[in-house]
Length: 132
Image 1: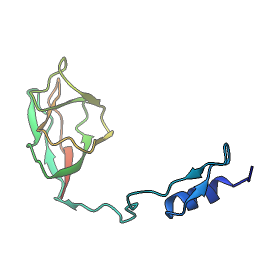
Image 2: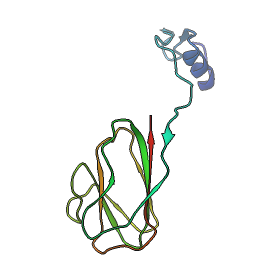
Image 3: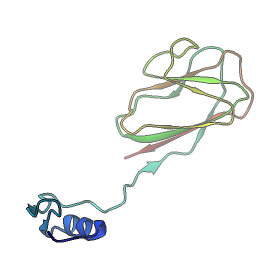
Image 4: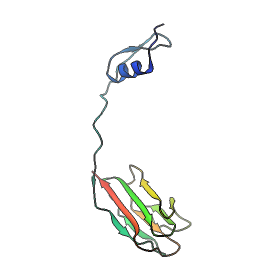
């Protein structure tokens, strides 16, 4: 049984070279699809400012081209974040404490709403969106 380093196996696997499985000596097939090594790109809109309110407020509208978004809480209050529907302190997906940043996961294209029990202070929430 031949001994291969992990780096050698990875290099052979990802370069499309058929290798040998060190555990049983069987052939390891090359990838049938090329590996994309190009960096992902996205355009970004300027960050907007939204004051935290004691009612649910729209932070981002539905956007099928969204690749990601960032929400930074500078309101002085906890903010409850919810995708797709009205946010409240009992219906939310994420709680964002003052000073925290939230990265919206890839694939979330629904509207995003925020709610604070007390009205916040300026600068409020800084919201940036990255699109295709």
